[in-house]
Length: 393
Ligand SMILES: Cc1ncc(COP(=O)(O)O)c(C=O)c1O
Image (cartoon, rainbow, N blue to C red):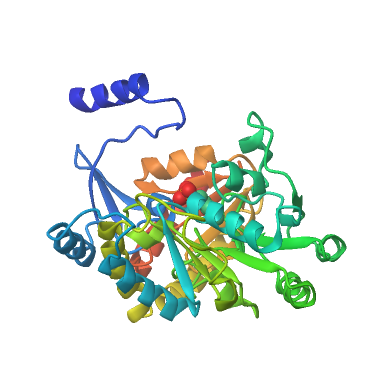
């Protein structure tokens, strides 16, 4: 333990103070579990914040990475690389979009979209996003994010951007006009507390999309690639985005994101407009192809949908059992929020003591993001331990 302790201390001393580290010393992962150096096993229902969708130590991802490493681990984007092309083909097939731009992260996918929108519509046109939304930490993404706490010390933000209330049809109708360029939507707000877009609101978005020809951007960085029980969260609605942003699960743990565009937007960028040294790194893309195959070729999201319904219905039963502790249960598939009466850090700690990892967002929303490969027995284990935690708290 001395050695582990020294890592905590050195981490605190050497790294900038941007993360509140959880004091467990993870040695490795396997499937849905993380293990510590002292042999403790945790059920990881946080999945590295929705990244480890197909499980730790996934053999197909490892094999794909290893084969690519044997060829080259980097090549400049001045050359084509076959790993990018193979992955692009798969992504476009399953998303029904026309073109891809690869990035290293979600926030970079958002930046690419903001630039593309400004080039298409002009920078004087307005971009609309939502209060409580989260799109990333770089300046463009931060500017469209609707969580003031992340922006507080960093003004000024980009201009011609406005946040409106999520699911407020009247406000949406009042603010979308000829001067609107684009609307950025998380169909389920993740960091904002697992808030699900209403069908009524989505219908109005669709009507306005047609009326004003605005660009609908689906930020699927957290919700995409099967997490909500369908390929993308927008698939739960009668709507087709013009741009889809993905990241997190895509690289199987390696840094990879993408902006997908419909045909209409496929010629907006020309050489020199945008780029990245590492974006679409071949090793990350090879891993991405394995991830896409694992999720899409076997339709893993259908299992997620079925088990997610079971999970949510069992949580509803717990809500009825503990009405003074649980205010609401919401979400889709394996993206579930449990709104607690009080701040949920204590519940997260209680579950951690019982060897389950989850997260707390928006202060009182317990966020559960199991790996997509989780089985009913994992959900039942969580439910049993959660019940115990609620009983004793
Ligand atoms: C919906 C959404 N968009 C964008 C981002 C930013 O992604 P990244 O952290 O990879 O930059 C996140 C990260 O949590 C997110 O949840």
